Image (tube, rainbow, N blue to C red):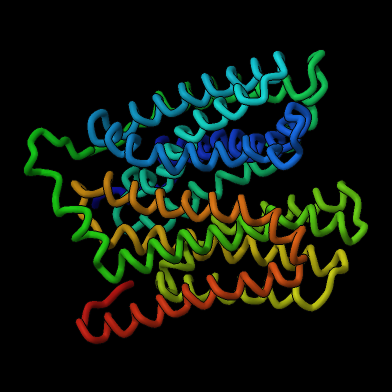
Length: 399
């Protein structure tokens, strides 16, 4: 009798922790870069350029990260990403120390490379467990983001004034976090990595892969699902400020939003295994629709709290299931280019939603921002219905 394969092996536990370190970096950058930018630039509308630099840097890095993964494999590529994170934190620290706004933008742009690497952790997770545990691996590694969701804001708040220059401390703390992540990643063993030694072992052309209905729906759902979340999350503090709520009240709403994003990861994989990938995507989409409905029904603290909590839950279901769906569209030797295409789509939508969120909520208001969010929900729903039709026509079961 053979021993059952353990899910919580050393490698998957280390990847969960690495995801936590990645989200500490991600959440901290998003939390402070706008404020630091506002302090350093004489032109207020340029204050969010460092945030934009982070997202755009991630989008432009997806192709380079894919090539690095293909050439050096998972672990070494991830280590390179972490080294870039350390470098970018030091550049941002120097920018804060010298008061150089454009150096800050440069540092956050460079940090985008680490972001593009970190977005691949969820794809690498299934390689560390048995095939029948794939869904759990994706969701548990995403759940590791709860570490960053809690630790990131608290580290930023604690270290904000520990140095003579405001916000220098958080960037130095991120440097330490980077070294911790580098140590953790050095112990992860990725078995059976596909080695590409010739031009003929890279599988189908990307154009052929992306034309598949399964891939199209997975990409659209992941990208637009992230876009809805980013659009409404980024606008919430501004909307609550207009409605007369304190910063601490808004911070509490955002904290519970992060809990909604990452805590379900402890059981989302089990739900996908039991009910199916498409069904959980529909559940995430319904939660997004409920989020918008609550936001449109009022602007009390309770409305904001429930709306953002459901937004986080909906994102988790939709993003986790979309990742699982995407993995059915490509072969092992095609993973680098296919995953890069998905992440580029996610980053591109994030860039648009990051740029438009503040502008839309300040010019058209919270109500019409939520009305506009209905469109991507409808597009994802149409995609899922279309995939269902394609599946029935081709008699190919998608589970």
